[in-house]
Image (cartoon, rainbow, N blue to C red; front, side, top):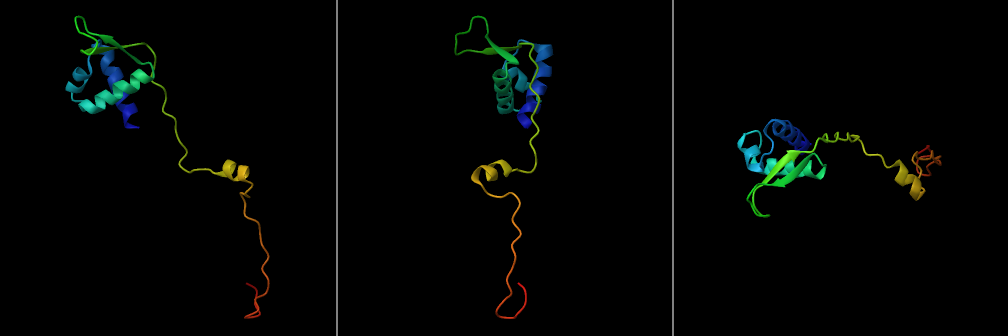
Length: 112
């Protein structure tokens, strides 16, 4: 998850340069302006960064970010193979196919 990696970079950078703006983070060259904005939004959503208004700016002006002291959440590892057993059970479908006996073929006289 690239946004988590960028958020971790932003966290370490902001630890030494707070308060800082998204533009200052992007100007470091660690990530693009869009990636910096996504990383900051991710950190804000998880309570890692807090937005503060710069002195003398209006509400639509420059926003600075500071650390809240909360760590980034761990990335959840997803299983690589989907499992539909619970859904099949809910629908009443067998998860293990039944063994069916075959009748003798009338065409060849052999088992199918």
